[in-house]
Each structure stands twice: as C-alpha cells, then as structure tokens.
Amino acid sequence: MEKFFELRGKNLRVGRKTLVMGIVNVTPDSFSDGGKFFSPENALAHAKKLVADGADILDIGAESTRPEAVPISVDEELSRLEKILPALKNFDVPISVDTYKPEVAAEALAMGADILNDVHGLEDSRMIDVAKKFDAPVVAMHSEKCCDVDVVEDVKKFFGRTLVNCAARNFDTTKIIFDPGIGFGKTQEENLQILRRLDELKFSDGQKLSLLIGVSRKSFIGWATGLELDERDAATGALCVWAATKGVDIVRVHNVEMISRMCLTIDKLRGDF
Image (cartoon, rainbow, N blue to C red; front, side, top):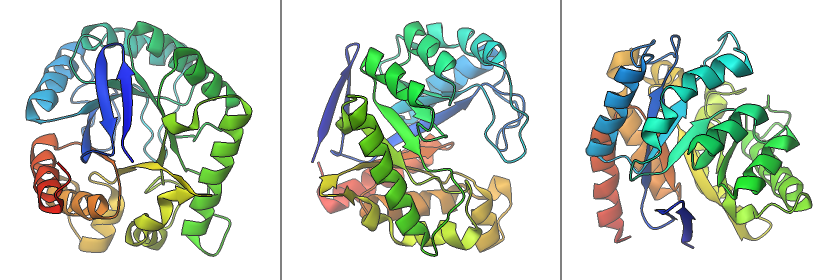
C-alpha cells in the first residue's frame, strides 16, 4: 500500500520505491563523520551533494545519539539547527529532523522541517502532539532494552503500543514510520535477528506499517564481518538491499550515491516501478 504525503509542496510517496534518507550530522561528535559537517557551510555543501547523489529525504541531526554521547540542552540543539534548517527548507526533498525533544521538534517544524525522527519512539506524548499540530509524518524508533526472549516480538509489541497511544491522542497513525532501532538497546545477535525477520514487522493487528531501518556503518557490521568503520559502506548497501526485499520502505544511510544505485537496481528487478 502506497502512502502519499504532501509536505508544504513537497511530495513524498512511501511504499512505491525504496526511499533513501541521507544523513547530515551537524554535531562535533557523531560516530561516523566525527564533526566533519558541524559547520553550517560544510553541512549545506554536504546536503546538496546528498540530494545530487539521489537522496529522497535528508535527515538532520544536531545531537549525537551514539552510545555514551553527552546529551545537549534544548538551546544548544536549536542553535545548531537554526544555522542550517532555513537554508534547507527550500530543497526539493523533504527534511527530517532527528530529535527526541518536543521543544526542538516544534521549533524545527516551524523553521521548515517536514518530518520528525524520534529515537525515543514517541515515549514523550508531547512529541505526538507536536506532530499532530503540524500534520507531520513521524519516525518512531524502538530503543528500549528488550524484555522478551524473542526480540522481534518485543519490537512488535512496541509498534502496537505506539499505534494505540497515537490513536488515543487523535494522531493519524498512517503518518507513523516505524524503525526497529538496530543498535539501540540490543545485543549484536538481536540486531541480526531483527534483520533476518524484517518481514514480520510489516503488520500490526492487520494494519500494514511503513518501515525504516538505519544500519549505516554501525558497529554490529564490524562485529559480524570484522570490517573497520571506513570499510562498511558496501556491507551497509547489502543490508539495505536485503531490507528492501523484506518490505522496508526507507533506508537511512551515509553513502547515498552507492546505496541509492543499489536500491534502484533491486526495485527495478522487483518490478516496483
């Protein structure tokens, strides 16, 4: 089932092809690019390159979510976003903001962002209210430490709870994009279990879900393959192709050029468009 979102004149079709979300970290301490795009000039140049390389969505993060990252204040996060978001709002592709703070989410949407990406999975119900106010799609990621023996069942329960919570606040649940949270609160083997069984996450109580995964250059790739951080793009692409065959709608990556070509090829092979 294809979902069509009109976001301030930008069209986003989820379910038609594998969408590639390009990562722009305006942080000094991200695990992959280590502050390479912290300056507004570098971030803007990088964003332009990602779009030229085939990004369907840009995801802007102003606070690192890597393990053991030091949290920053609302004011600091907004200060970083204010330096880049106004320049991005007129891009042809939708702009997503990676934040779990309702205050930041509201200001970012007011500044021109189109989508919210919440690594805390809407556990703060105010995030639902912000998304509802701006009629914005939202990515809800599972980041809890798993309680069940079966990690996939744990993630499915989280998806179900999120749907119920959003419906209770009169938020359109078709606007939720679910992320199983690879690398967040999970063992390396649990990460692999989720990837093996992605197709089991496509439905909740009969409702077909939109799925996003973020596997780009993550440590579990190194654990599984022995590859160093700067050697993981091809492995990332392989996982993204696998995910596309399992029903994942959006892949969040650093190397957009390589992976957009890989996803285009698999989509053509499947006859999706």
